[in-house]
Image (cartoon, rainbow, N blue to C red; front, side):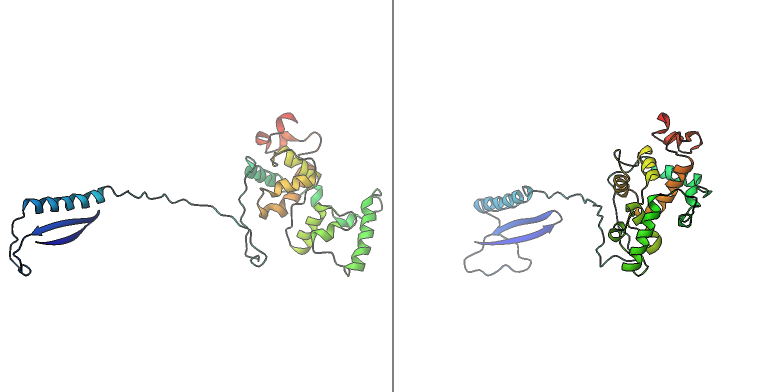
Length: 263
């Protein structure tokens, strides 16, 4: 007795078919066209067992589930070697105030005239003899001497060195970095920016100092707006959003200002 196994491939897997036949002892392989002898009862049963065994292995094979592809949003900060003029730092804020873009657009409209005191006054008025004596004049004289001695008449190129000068705080340091060196190092926050940011709820929680407000704003405000926001809000605070008795009736943000109903 001789046995031959044939394997056929299907789309769903492999199927093993068993065929058995009898030949006389000493007989060679069956030629082409020669029919196989009928199977005996035992041989047929053995072939059937092989058939069901192969089918059983195929049917009980566990199906693999395809995993659904997931997309991830990745934000990173460029290293010092990667930073350049064309490099934009990716930032994904975890929180941002409601309606802030429309509020900012309205403030730009109200400030389009550029006629606030901040738009007209500058350092040239520091020498005005009619101006009341203040520490600013003393600080300017001291700082001028330091700049002449240590920096050759120039100014420092870092925030840390600027705030070390007499009377120079974070607000003036960030303004100097933007105006003198063309570097946006941070948001310049004074009392006007501090007040308006809290009234519009541009901070996640109430802040108690301009420096705290600066850190809160820098967490969500796009970096390309940092240099604009100081002059914009200072003039808005001088003309419309006054410290006392703000002119809410003339403000375009009255309907969306959280503080308008209680001022």
